[in-house]
Image (cartoon, rainbow, N blue to C red; front, side, top):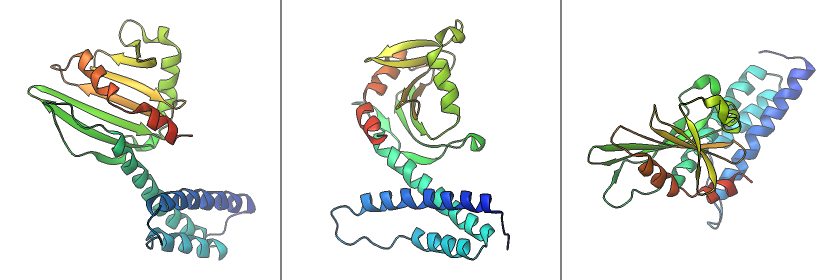
Length: 210
């Protein structure tokens, strides 16, 4: 058992609250209009964290909360899947996939979907809660720093960053909170990347962040 000083205890209390609030919101949303909510398996882990915290067993409390927060991030990334559009006519699409962003140190969650049409291969990715997005936002704010490679464009009034080297078109949403990216192979034109991003409901994404 580990006992921390009062300042660490206060931080743990904040972390506990941070774990509880998203769960209650997600749980309420899942059960809206369905009467009584089914038991949520995370409730037991939250109670475990509370009991351990009250007993001063901070190691156990932190471990339980980390499990809760990891599951909440997974649920949130699963929610991102509904923002990935259906394929346009003539295209095939994989099932959306959701999970943690590929850079663990930067944190974040994301969902992605792959689309194919003959030789054309395109991937749409939605990423949120990543420290890397703040740095990318600075690039959007200072186009001169891009040099002669990537360039800032306008996509239906939204700023978009096109990277010709990676054939990727990116849009930041909600004060740099969410990144939506369309990336294609050499057979995919920039116009096709733009067409796919136009299929994304950016207004719905922005409303979810309010």
